[in-house]
Image (cartoon, rainbow, N blue to C red):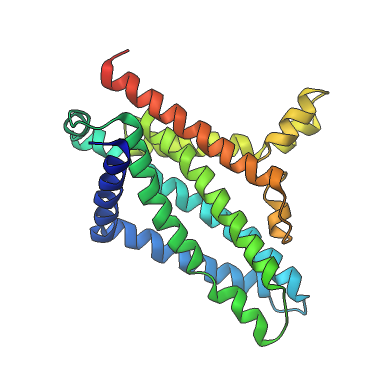
Length: 245
């Protein structure tokens, strides 16, 4: 079985599991509910605000719920198989570790992307009393999808390393929080560490431009690179566990 076909089969299997899982629908419902509440309570608010500011605030809060959802979605990917005792069966199949990691990641990414795009009606509401650029909306959502994919990849690594779903969630949250707080560490560091930490800041350095509707190639490359490195690390960790190396 080729890696591509195996990846597609695993992704389809995982998607079916998500659709049949009450937990998956609960995560979706809670995420959309919280996004709606934050949009009305803080992004729109009760006072007069510029439409662009409303949109920027929406992307700010939605970035937070997207990262939280990515941890909740990814913590079960491998750790649940390990807890249920089905991981040895999966590892005995004629599929590579990359296909397992890739298939599970793709399935979770499809779910997360669908949840993220389901919030499109909120920016559309701005047009009722204001006006914003469609490019700003598109840029912001591209940033959300890249941020979600990156944190989901980190969560996949945490799910491979964690012995249980709880441990996987804690590990994923710790890694993501470290990248989020790099900008604070940069303030108290000296060069060249200061520049390195500032460049690693997941939200402050790389998502804020998307929040303002700005598309920078360096930010796209950063998100894709971190996601790729996390998936490579997850694949190698799973291979080591599989072969006891």
